[in-house]
Amino acid sequence: MVQFIRSYGTLACFALLVVLFWVLLPGTFGTPRNLFNITQQVSMLAVTAFAMTIVMAMGDYDLSVGSMASLAGIVAAVTFKEFDAAGLALVAALVVGFLGGALNGFLVSYLGILPFVATLGTLTVFSGLAFLLAGGKTIFGSDIPASFGAFARSGIPVWKQGEAIIAIPNLTVVAAVTFLAVWFLLQKMVFGRHLYAMGGNSEAARLAGIAVKRTRLIAFALSGLAASVAGLMYMSRVASANPTQGSGLMLDAIAAVFLGMTMSANGEPRVLNTLAGVLFLGVLSNGLTQLSIDSYVRDILVGSIIIAAVAVSGLEKLRRN
Image 1: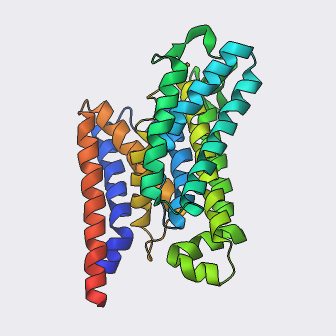
Image 2 (image 1 turned 90 degrees about the vertical axis):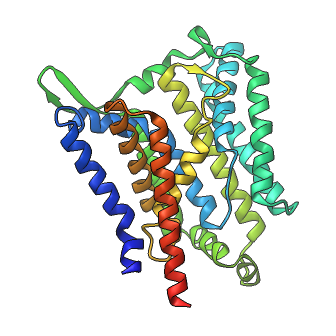
């Protein structure tokens, strides 16, 4: 019974949540436009959470993803302001994200600093750099490439509903491509098997011939790269760059992965389960917003669900012992 609740409890809560909002908001929640809107709203979180799944698969955490997203957006805006080149701004932001993630990997792998401590330190560094480059203010207007804003406002047309055209948002497409890439990496590539081996026992993985340090560095670099992509997506959506725009991404990404882990029989991070966790958070936020319920209620509910899932997992371990 405990095992059943552990595997399907979160999924059942998600299904009940969808039904509840569908009943309470019959004219808005279940419409195709709103459902696509949910996928767009969570697209930045999804990209970050999928990459966080890579890091957590090897038993580590990356607390710097939110500040890296903010820094990437600022770097893109400042680069465009100085050189008036949207392509260069895009590349600069991605390079900063990759190098920032690689720095995390170096600190953890080669200097032996605990992931929590290392990424907590770089979180502060990246945040400070974002404020420094932005001069402590929001960058918007002509300093943001017009093509960035146009990208977020566009999508792939699916069908026509009356006079309105229903389209899959471009940001949703980016999140979907990221999902497929991470799924392939974790499930079909040797690199993914190495990550899970390290998550099980890092020392045993090293003795088995896995290049633990290099693998960990690459995983963190990918996390930083994904965070920079999320930062660019956010900047595209709001047509501005703010030093604090990614502040909520880290906690939500970890929550999404944890929610996904409660759906796994062995408690391992799986990207498909992370997707379910992301959608859970997205549906919860969207429904509460439409019901005009304070956003803090969402945090209370998510925290309670995670605590309950971990408690059930603990009860299962006690039963086995």
